Amino acid sequence: MSILSSIAKPDDRSIICTITGDAGLGKTSLAATFPKPIFIRAEDGLQAIPVQTRPDAFPLLSNVDMLWEQLTALIKEDHDYKTLVIDSVTQLDNLFTNHIVDTDPKKPRTIAQALGGYGAGFQALSSLHGRVRKAAGILNEAKGMNIVFIAHSETETIELPDQDPYTRYNIRMQKKSVSHYTDNTDLVGYLKLETHTFGDGERKKAISDGTRILVTYASAANISKNRYGISKDLLVVNGTNPLLNLIPSIGA
Image 1: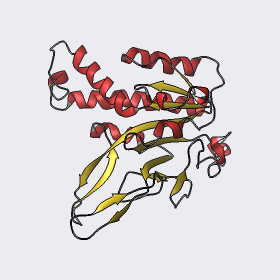
Image 2 (image 1 turned 45 degrees about the vertical axis):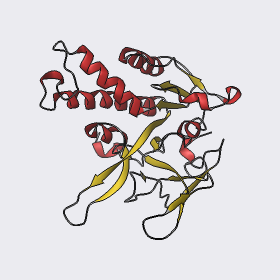
Image 3 (image 1 turned 90 degrees about the vertical axis):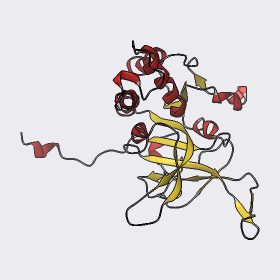
């Protein structure tokens, strides 16, 4: 039989996405509005959600072995969860960093000195994030689960050869690890307050009425993208998910 006989239009599948933004904007609350979520927690962001609507969660991670046990259980055991939320990959970065430093027999003081230095510690750190991304991919493909990575943001300076340097928001973690949560994902959303500035000259004041916006299209101001043709800001209201009506494959 010819390999050409295997050609077909790929089916829609559940989403793999990253939601990033400053602390306290409701990233965890937004992730909790995805269908039937289960949380893996590197930090305890679920305290912000009332108990009566709080989603299920594994015990808070205290070491790396717990993470692999929780992911393995979701992959190998039967369950009816439709979304995996990892909250947050930024804190996971800290957990991985401590693990690499603490398990190095030479007892380095920093990740830069770990595993002999010369970038080996940072490469090991990226490999651990890659392992998380691989497990998430298995859950997405084999069990049809949505995957939501939560990340905290920070500003970075971009220096391109054909224009002046500028700043943008990116994920707050070691740079080699960021690509696992931005490159091979269906959507990266930057959650922010809708802000207006007033005043003249250098003394300007930023004012917001608390309205939250999710940016999911390419922007020079922040890391964001999507594969669904979304080209406008999405209003985020407590308890609702603006992506559900735009991306049917997320499910209900």
